[in-house]
Image 1: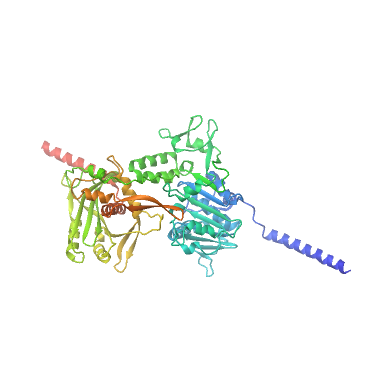
Image 2 (image 1 turned 30 degrees about the horizontal axis):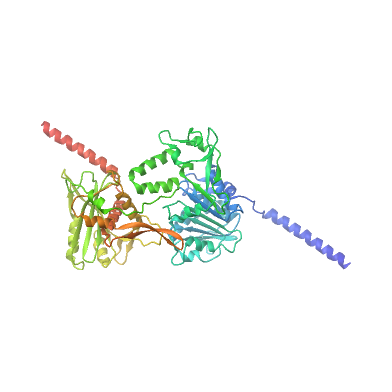
Length: 603
């Protein structure tokens, strides 16, 4: 009897459990087993702030993205590398991976940007709009305005996990909670070390060790050969390229720049040589083909030729423009259009070659100059100043390299500096030029004096500047932002001097007159010592804990001429003049003057 009752109770419990399970499944059905691309096609909504095509996500719009996203849901790989150009949807791939895990496979997620500031910007400009406009995510993440919200700029909580955002320059953000999914974006812009803690990528990866199903995704546009993190990772991977079949012979192949014909805007088949336009190629069904299929890391390479958002005609024109603008522009094009590294020329420029190409000017300001800028380097006993003229295509002319010596603690030398920066220079036709923008170094022992001097002259665009200190390998643009220095409230322009030196050195290597060529006059302070200072640094690749980075190294004690040319280049960027318009206006004025002269001759 007791045995019977036990069996009866057991059967009752089974019926109750079965009924409960049935009710749960009806009320809360288990999430479907979707891949990332299937999730995006079903649920993801693109926001108007981040997309030119807002609305329902369609992977078919850029079919090469499907395999990349779905690699995340594959159990075969835990490391995924994406080395890619711009305009191929890298950010949206990252967003879809994050959104998928928030909704379908909850986990602690870490999204790393190069800096904390960039992480905040990414959160506001990419993540927040995605959550707002994708209903299934909006229902998971609480409103940031609610009192008990787990939704802040750098942290988004949801049932079963969270999305944390941080910068590669923040040791604290990289070394706290366990993480299952790491999304490292633009790793080539990461510093070599997060403070003194070491490689930020390694710090983040260590946080995944407790998860058997961890995923580590690294994404970046590459930078310089030998110092590119993403290229180093890609070389260890399966090295997959998206191949399309030739519309004529059906031979699969990646789209390559060398096979693009400029005149017809067509791509030649590597096998049969047939030419087809981009629409014919992109209509074909492609597939990823691995060069190293046995690798343990899944690696994908993308270039802009595949992009549905960038036309080949535009890419060709961008290439032509970059070729005209010189090596620095070509570097950017190779990185951002081809998704390939740029090989820097590490050799030091020859100062005697530059000195030997000095020219005789027939006036203070040569004919091609449209505007003037100046730069000031502050030493303990002197000001060193360079005035530079700029023309069409950022072709430059050194106007004068000048030194004012004196006691910087006395007002007289500051008055002399003000007088010098107020003077004008003339062309052969008598037209006068004044300095439109001046960048003045605020480092050294006279910082407050510089602030006082520039504060009173901001209306003349005389600005205090400060080289931005960055971690090893960290990138900053030449003009890297502004602040107001305390207590004077002086406008302080921060400069990425490494980027500036790269620009200057690239321009100095140009040997033909035209865009970005640097002219120098005979005399006017441009002596042999000047060119020794202009070429006093070279770019070297170094390693810290196995991570390569590039650094500018002084080979001579005096490098003020190089610094001043960097500051002048920054002054031009601050002004951002339309030199083409200036050129057109000057041509019209010249024609009018000729007509007036001719009419007087007739009279």
